[in-house]
Length: 397
Image (cartoon, rainbow, N blue to C red):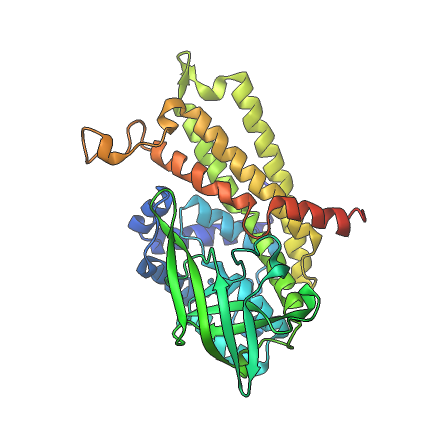
């Protein structure tokens, strides 16, 4: 995707490619490319290699151990990593909690937690959603009651991604039940080894353990683990969500998916000719690529504004909506391109039990990706909610 890069940008891209070629294990890249789940050890290995290079948190300020990458550098890094099938950097510590701590955390919290995020000593998960508080997050009911030098936390979080690997969780909790919904919420940092915490797996339809429920029963959390001020957590939550939604746009992953779709369209045949030569298919493919280029440009503008100290606002909602739609359109077109091979197959029902999936080698990956990415338009705040934010904040309606 040509966005008129400078010679310095092109040199940086080559450096990223060289690093990926030398440091990304082929086995891990294969697992990512096939849409398979990674083990904690695989995530940790890649995390460590990026940190050793100084690229785990390239966008962080140098004062906190980052490289202060420009918006273009971040874009190039994410794009090349996606094309190489590198594991996505687990965002909860590096890209979500860290900006909150850097902006609102105490000096003691910054000095303690930020280095541990980089080193991998702490693996964070996100305690936001609850069974009755997903897109309507402000209706959350998990309570934290002050008791001397501790808060006592009771409640439940759900859809906690990779919580089975985490040793810490950042949570939104209700500290003033009598205040208006958004005004009675606080932001707590909680050690997952604290007595009273139980992690229960949620097994998805494809058998994968990716998300969890987390239950809190009389969990004692030190008061010094409160980020910012009590009952001001909604402010910090919104700040975090704008960073999350910008990441959900997934420009690099969309571009990698588009390139895979093009390769697929050259292999698949329709009436004896490559599918890429079908005018209707080619037109749909072109429309997606045009939209992706426009979104990439918008993403660069938003990230560049954040580099200048401005937190992403409703623009991040625009990116979240458009990014999730584009990625799902790419997945859907890929599924249509492979025709009957897109059907989900149960391995146990096949004559050859060693056969993972009939058809071309990319068939199973295409189906798995299509099914899994249906969630993109829901998590991080559903697209319907994001459109409401855009309507109020930008259009003033």
